[in-house]
Length: 293
Length: 161
Image (cartoon, rainbow over all chains, first blue to last red; front, side, top):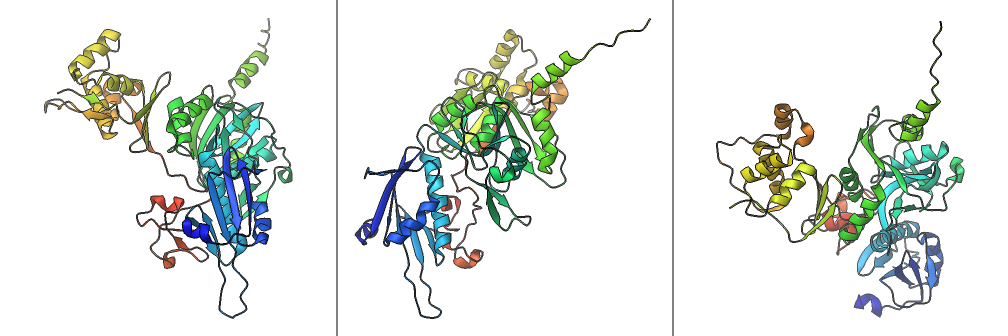
């Protein structure tokens, strides 16, 4: 870190996101202008010089010589986050590292890798890592009328409610080689602005051709499924366990392998397993036919 | 010497019918169903398996006999939740969960310990690929180390980013 500190830094900014204090310095001012579009959700600029982490951006200089490349290097603390001739790629790696840092160290929030939508004033959580299919399922749910919370993180408060983290959905191309960003509005849906309690947790893995035959899970199994995707689990397991317990209390938890996302929509939106009040209402609406004489 | 549960470096979260145990030393989390949790709590170093079985019978859980308790102890030991485990006499057969369900007809009574390893945080969208050199990485990625957080799970300490 001392070596980095000895370099000449032309510009710097400070800010916070979810209580994590970040400093960003660069050897050229234009680097900070470029990086602004990659700052995390919840970023608030501050003048407070004390920070939890410093990012150092060393922007390479243009080189006229053929076959010579100039590298852009970004450090998070003393760790190299990016080293690439493409500054756009460097910014994306920076954004990814910073997002993870915030997710791991956020104060009063627990970040879980999960897709989240709102339905009937309750939240539906879809925990899972990259390629588990959660973004595709979230996108289908939003297209069908659910409100968008996130396709990236479930942000849980100590009372167990989930807050919106509405970054654009990162929808993969058919061959999974590329991802494009789409907002909920572009999908024809709306983004939530308020936290909701969780009523349903869907632990699913996409497998082409599979039929959705979920099995109900216990509360403990549900907590394990979330814990396996919880960013700060190792750093603060005591607080994480309590938060996850409160989150799934009262929620129904199901696990299974699914095929196409569209096949789940009816089960999620109307299924009596998921919404017992739907089954009760259906029973109370049933009128006993009159017997003929 | 009878079975004794581990107490150090464990976080416990009680649920209505289960017990969650987080092993801070190994970063593993275990979910004990009711039977496994009751057996674990009775592992105080002074209670034998026979005494545990008697305890269950007095509580009205007559179907939780010694083979079920031995199965629980096996799973708890495998999960490193016991400091000491009572030696199993050769004449006592240890039954698997399926055998217990078949014999007693109550699969739910079998002790179940479910374990997960809590992963190191990695950036969303990242598939960690460990490497020794840049040649191990796909085009556009570098083999980085130097304590990079995402590479913590790699034996070499380096991964493709």
